Length: 163
Picture (tube, rainbow, N blue to C red):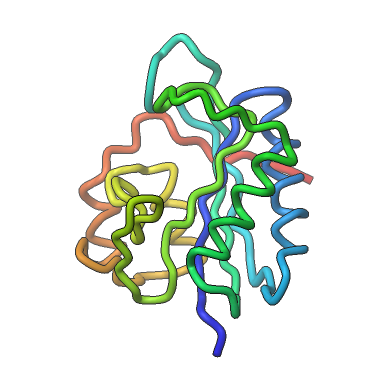
């Protein structure tokens, strides 16, 4: 049985638009999974240190037969393929960042995987693109997406026009 998953994508290094679009192409190749839709691309200020470039973010919806853990491994494989460096710096610059935001309606709390993704409900660069794909989905433990959008401050998010 397939599970609908949502993946957040972000980049602020080495042509971020190209990095996000390359990651989307790689997501399409995950075994036993189908990319259903992609949100618009958005540019926004970084969450972490201000002395880094703006981020480009998007969200994709996928249907998968993979377990959450196996799907996460595929996301990390794609990050590695694109040159992601894991230096332990939280919220620092990234060539690519892929986050498993939602895995069906499940709540998962394991040392290496938390779903829904922690903090996603407070991040305009996640919930606004997510709303393009998921409408008024219920975020387990957080509530309806429209209510979260109303609470979230949109500091700098701008929709990008891409070909």
